Length: 339
Image 1 (cartoon, rainbow, N blue to C red):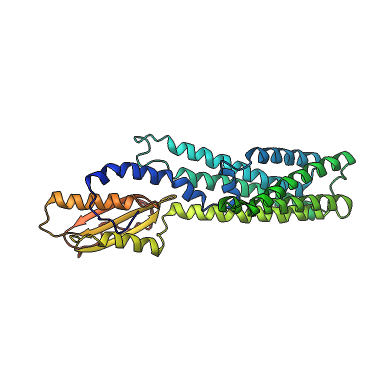
Image 2: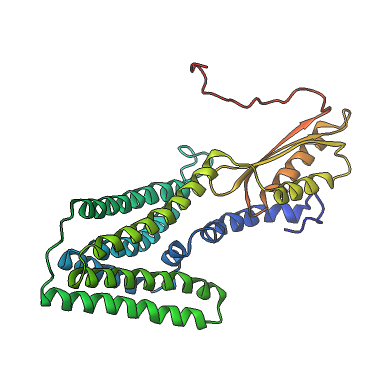
């Protein structure tokens, strides 16, 4: 949107408002996905090698069951996390399209951050469970059973194949001229590292010192927990209602100040309510301004603000003076609860 465009839209512009707003909502997925870790973005990318991830994860699960290695289990958990993240986020994206305005009056854009929080919390818990089992094995000083030749063959075949696939994808993405594809190279690189750590820990733990296997599992589990704990925190904060950064508030204030009949701007407030921002604007208009003209100014300002790609909904409050107390109070506790 051009912030230098006239505030009051023409008739033709008003006809295009619905189309523009639709385009803004359709851009939500791209804006949201760009803030996620690379491993989640690759799971959502329609051009990502999804079938390779399914095959690789299936093989790693089989290798985990076959070998009984905790390090391989931790590596498998990371791969399973990548795969399931893409599926869950894609499901929530489809869910947002099916809107019942009577049951969900403002839509279901908050489904995605809620889905991420639930999923990431579950995966972090699974990672913690692997960490606990590995720590218990170290504390109890109970070596695991040695792997047979058949188990080692399967382990080498599956882990080396999975690592080779990810290594090839890393080389391809790194050399690509597409910036989006190059962004996936980092995720593939970390997959290679986790697979190698898991394989080395499992083999060394089986052949030399048994404690290497649970130690490797602990390292990979800590990586999984730390990676997704940050994702949980970021999305939880977005649902709490964090204020927009100064540059967003400055842009909104500039947009409001451009109309000559707006005497003063009382409040410009923007805060997260899921992925996008809710905006509240209080403006002062001339006391003798006709209601029809005041309504046109307020409505056009609301439409202009909601055309911004980072804004979900805008509320414009019109007043004839700004010396009164704030219309809304900030609650510090739930109603009818003990102080």
